Image (tube, rainbow, N blue to C red):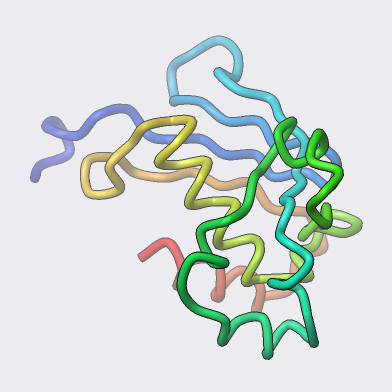
Length: 133
């Protein structure tokens, strides 16, 4: 698909406290929500590597943003700390919900613009780019 045939770029500004997202060309973000994700207690057993291997329904049983903050029966996590992504598994889930549930965008039809902190490591930048390809 040519550049002219693409829809506006999706813009996602991931912050430690809040994530702002929308489309390029808009004067303000379409959504501003807490950068939180709520997962079931059983899904968080063990460390990140152990949680990453959990498959099935538990992988789909999570909430982001305001919904995450309002779920007392779930464990609320903040995958970004001091502007740096610390839990990539949760961050990927967060982005997936941002793109498909909130922006209702098909990745093949849009370019993406993600902000990053000034002191982001090159490794984090490469990892982010790899996840969005």
